[in-house]
Image (tube, rainbow, N blue to C red; front, top):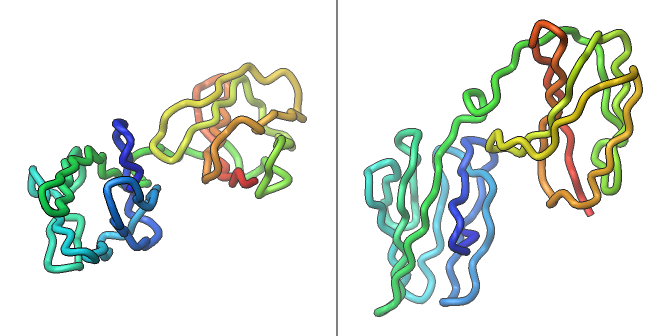
Length: 176
C-alpha cells in the first residue's frame, strides 16, 4: 500500500496482492476487488478500525464503502493506513450527451487528442479514478490536444460537458 501520510482510495475493480515486507517497503495499490489477499510474510498482522474490511488470515473482504483505517503490525512496529473505499460507479456519474467522441492515442504518455465529432461541448475535465478534478478547461473547437506528461501513471476519466451540463465520460490510460 502507498504508505505515505496521504490517504489512498480503493476501488472495487481489479484484484491486487497487497504485500508488506518491512518498515520501508510497501506495494502501491490503486484498486482492488471486493475480495483480495494481503501478505503475511515475516509475521505481519493486518487489522481494521471501523469494520469496513474483514480479514481472515491472508484473505480480506471489502464490506462497505467509506473511510477505513487499516493497521499493519510487524513486531513492535505499527502503521495506520487511512483508506477510502469507493465504488467506481458512484465516484463518477455517467450521463451521456452523445455516443460520439474519441481520445487517441490511448494509452498515452505525453498528450491526448480529443475529437468531439459532433458533440456540442463547452467544458472538459480530467479526473483521476477517485473523482478528483486534475484539469478543467473551456472547449473552443471540435479538436483538442491536451498535454498529460505531468500526470501520474494510471487510468483517468475525461468528462465533457455540454451547455446544459450533461456529461459524456471517456476513459484513457496514462503510461510511461
